[in-house]
Image (cartoon, rainbow, N blue to C red; front, side):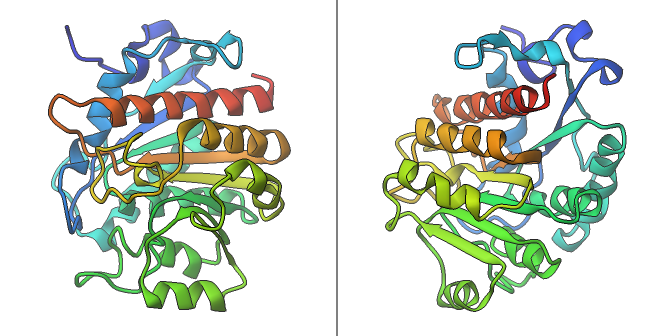
Length: 293
């Protein structure tokens, strides 16, 4: 079987940039991983798995791919920059697609990749908030010698003035917990307090402004759903409840951008990358539905 050459292995008529509403941007960056490595191979694994995803969406009752989905060249394209430099490459690249009115779905790589896309969207949608699905707070000021690694990415987003609404959090440091308590720009729905995500949906949506950027670390899911992550944490989210929340957000708010990250491919086990591919496609579908594409 030949590997997919673009997301969903779409034909040229559905994957040309000029004719596409959405862009898949692979960012295979992995420089600050501190436990199990391998997320640098995540974007390619998700794109390969996406070739097995049916184009007909059974929930939305349509073939969403007809809106056009262009797969961009991966960035960085050469030597991986230091973590504090990565967003200087990704921010203008994402901005270039936004200025062409494309919906950008970035695929990581470690969660460090989210900073550039978030900042690019914030420049154009200054009132947005990040809906952050994760097992971890990612709010450390510094972690393993850098201020820009995967454990610090949402701290840098917060410092940029972007509000955070966090879902699925179940592992964080005392420093991060203190910041959450002190900041009026961080709303955290801890996993242990919201085991029934459906009951929290209204509160989560109410915490969001009109414009929303969605950032999904795959370790937000329970390890039974997504075992292929760098730090699998017990007690996580499940796929149907995450989809239900995202659809509610898409109907009551405007999803302006998204990323799915932290896929760590496992030999002989494709559950995580296939789930990520389905998730990315479904988010594009929700955006298409809400925008009337």
